Image (cartoon, rainbow, N blue to C red; front, top):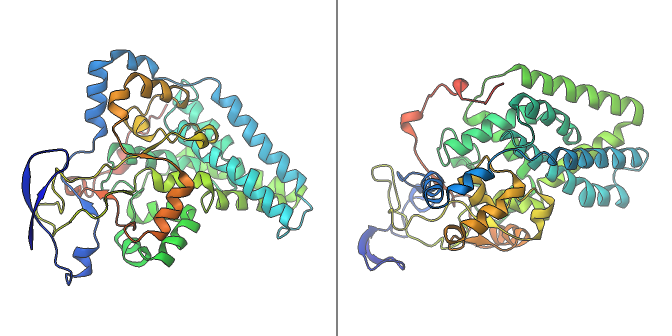
Length: 372
């Protein structure tokens, strides 16, 4: 049926085709498909035009490497301390959750900073330091993260190139309460395994170094300290991407968690939602957990200016307050996990997607990885 809808921020009235209740699941359950460009490039241009001094905020942050090194050493210290502690004991699990998961979430996000070359001047130094930072994760990760994350920034919402997006199968099978709880518990595996099923990246010597170095450190740890220390690293990584307060950022950043009852119709000319009703697709969080996660909650700011280091993002928001204050915000990462799992309006379909047909089959191996 057709519905006449007045957009709340406009006097314009337009007609939108809404699907009947007995429509197929392919229509009732679908992503927010749009042909509109992602919003960050335009907002970056507008901010720079009004506040050219923002350009001075770009560049690497020299002190970050010392903080990261401290977190890595902390993880080694706890791993050594637990080397003879039973894995299923309360002490082992509690330390893995409170210290290990919090530290490894900080390490994941330090690798995120490194993927934007925000710790050192030369890209190669960022890549090599990322391999060192990777150690407490337990498995090689840093070398693959950078090119996939660059795709996320350059082609946000692209069904073929943005591997942060859930797939059609995830939407179909995991959009009920049990499925969403399963997804929230095992998020780390979805983010680790999904990319290889969507698009492939070129294997480089940095990947090889990442694998060799990580396996070498893991072997030495097991040989001299035993399996319990290594399992502490693995458990820390799993819990960091599971039901942990800091893990709320995975869902909070790009899932559409408000105004989800906007009608979506059949796919017409690559879109099933009008330009006027297209929801925001990036959300910021300004709470205290940013102190543990390199300000990753400043996510609109980060996508607008990916080469501003974490220490300068609050200043960006202060300068361009009129651009960021009106945008939707997330108040609690813990609340996001709960609301996502147990509110019927929140599902894995709640993401903005673009078809990207013109880029389907693109030669991703030529992606600019900022090689040295």
